[in-house]
Amino acid sequence: MASTYYSILNIPVSATQRDIKVAYRKLVQKHHPDVNTSGNDELIKTINVAYETLSNPEKKAVYDQRLLGNYNTSTTTSYNPPARPRRRTSSFRYRYRGSASNTSYTYSTKTKLQGWGAVILAILLIFIGIRAMHYYSSGYYYRQASIAEANENYNEAFRLYQLAIRDWGSKSVEASIKIVELNQQIRSYNAMIDHSQTGLKYEPDSAQSARLYYLQGIGYEHVNQYKDAKKSYLNSLSYKFNKDTIYNHLGIIYLNKLENYNEAQKIYTYLLIDEANNESDYYNRGLCYQLLGKHAEAIEDFLIILKNDPYNGRILFQLGRSYLALGQTGIACEYLRFAQRQGVNISPSDFEKACE
Image (cartoon, rainbow, N blue to C red; front, side):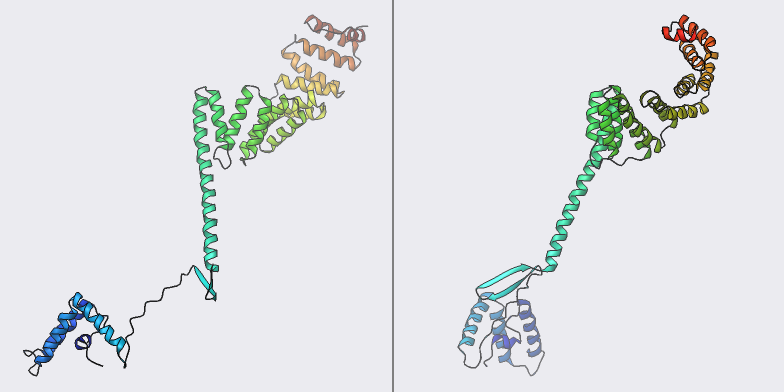
């Protein structure tokens, strides 16, 4: 094969300009007469011609074109241009070759898993974002409502407390309690019941649960749903709400509404342990004893009240009834007449029985 400028400079066809310059300098230093006494002037001239051609891009392009044509027409060898690097197949899909005219693509299992992971992560982030938005906006509306309530702007406070009640809100329970209390002020008892139930849906702590059940009981009591009121009060008591407060409500319900005098009497007995001078509790327990036919015990409770208030017509009347039930008509008559003088309306039949 004939020598080429590339072979003279001992470089490949794909050599860069820098490669050409470096190769040229090495050959010159090696064969120059000043360095090598056996140097060949003709070789130096050939090296210079090769370098002048290949270092000039335009001359090199013409030379390469002519050289390529010579290689293609040679019978001894052929020129093979450098192979193009094979395009790397994407790791995200692979190809099935059914035939030359039918090529289909599909995603790999790894890619599908990555895709589903990305979708799930996006959904999770959206869910967390919504929850965070509800959490912080609930606190914001609650603070604004508290300011409005402090300024006695109750309509605005009511509206803002309602906005503070939301799923995953940080102040949903507190806002529910506030709304129930506002409804109590305006005597909207059915709304008290509904919003108490709303607050209980948001997993309140024990103190909040006790408060909500107590307020719910008040709502039921005022709409005459006494069994539901009793249930709510007992639930409140199970969460350690003030026992005396709950017992005062339950005592009235048992005595005046549900006619469960035994339970009412037990409640008032308990209340009198801590507050022995409470005349109201003595009176209510006396009524329980009276309705249970325990008139001697009733008389004892009524007399305790009478010591501090000897002109209490209501107590005088109840004493007269209990003494009459025990058959002590004389003293019963005296108490009934005394009660009448205090303005109590006594039925003629009671006088006939006691004052024959």
